[in-house]
Image (cartoon, rainbow, N blue to C red):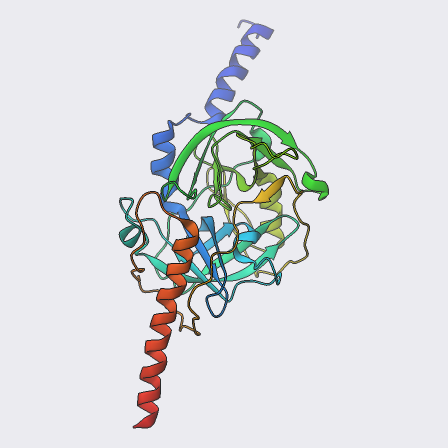
Length: 333
């Protein structure tokens, strides 16, 4: 029997690392695999005066969604928006908001952390399992690794795919202890907030959190965006007792969700990707439902995030008024 040489061991280690790392997917394959589990999230204040929009990832088949806190927390009050609407991806994205946003489900916040800019949502009344995005160990990702993002960048398209690489790593981002991020030149814009940054196997290595827009001298900053590492998000989820699928189906412990709060603003040169919408008509309390609901028509490609949020609030206000009127007639009988 021949002795095993160092050369043989090195070759075996290369083969093993290749097998262990899995197959590198094309951007198209990643999109087809992950995009059905990517959602659009809209938050509205009572009265429809203010709102916010962004992206989220379904991390459990029963309807748990991971997104950014600043997508679902009102900036002025620091409290969750009174209403949350989540839109599931259609079979085909056409660029027409009326059809692309026809699968609306109500949601509620079950936990959030403003220092980490993370929020966990739960869809109401889901009875059928949903597709999910697998979480990855972000410690495996390195500078130069190829990554892709899926989200809803304003002035772009819904469920947009952008590609790039990890550009740098930053620990304790903006002075927040434990908030470790990837810098990436993957195209991100307002509306991508809370969406997944995916590795070459289509697994989430980061939560897209912030973009650098303008330097201190007023010049625009390009290709500088930041994603919270999954190695930060996963322990936070565990603290909430949330089950999520890590890697190739490794389950995390499941349990009850506990809220987390507090706040840490971003530096002036790095701004959240979501901001309040323009004022719209007042809206009233709307009974929660999981039935798909068609939103009011809005301008098609490219979409305007503020107008989309405003039109959504107006549609809900109109429906609330109709329901309130019907309840009044029934009481009068």
